[in-house]
Image (cartoon, rainbow, N blue to C red; front, side):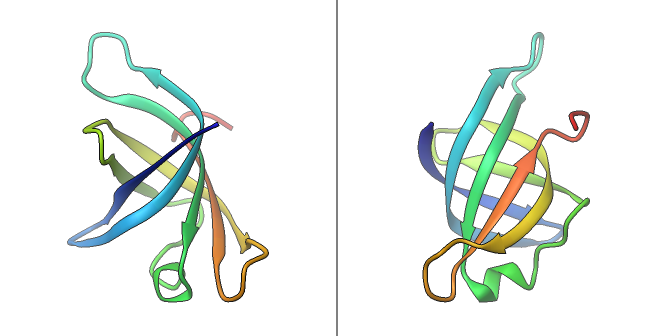
Length: 92
């Protein structure tokens, strides 16, 4: 698992410095886009802005970017923190 920070773009909003744990990271052939899947750690304030089954743009600090869909949001075991699972839009 690869850990990195990034920003989650939500329409005109941006959740900055989201901690991401990547389980899948593949370059999309013929494109600058990536296929990313894994988990994001969110504060409760960030969590209220994120919905499941909705596409978002994830921009990692190393410059990689991908469309992702949040498929589940749950407590992450730390006080007041949430864990959001995400995947590429075309993957179940």
